[in-house]
Image (cartoon, rainbow over all chains, first blue to last red; front, top):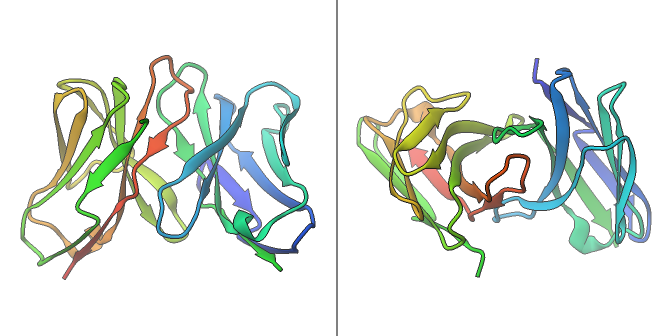
Length: 111
Length: 113
């Protein structure tokens, strides 16, 4: 079983809608989380990190972390066609250089 | 310019041939990584390098080796490539301190026939 599991595998939302992506870790040592986005034919690009319980907002993106349940989510409001991409959750131990990635969620925003 | 550059972008090799994938970064980052990406598996860490000649195995190092003789350059070598090493390979770098964001290159799509 992968240490970082993402759901759903794929997601379609209408343009202007809200997209919600989930990530759960099975390792309590993972305390630091990053969200990455990968457009077709490119490398992943970092969106935002979260390591404190609660919400963190950056523009249209909001990450939420619940350390007790080891659950991280990413919410994208006012979704745009350019948000269509593969989204990865990555987890690491505090101060560690090694990241474990989930399998990804493929988001499609329909115009 | 905060860039990670990978060469080549596409590569086709025959089983048993040696493969060299190259990666450069212009951010003077100490830490560099090699990942491979396969559908349904996400990104899997092959090797991590903490600085010149300071390399450590990742989660799937078997069949791979690395070389880092200059801070800005990190190579991945496949000696006698196998068909199951067909994948997209990504190089990344990060600034020191741990838990920092990774900067990825565009990837090398390797096909081993």
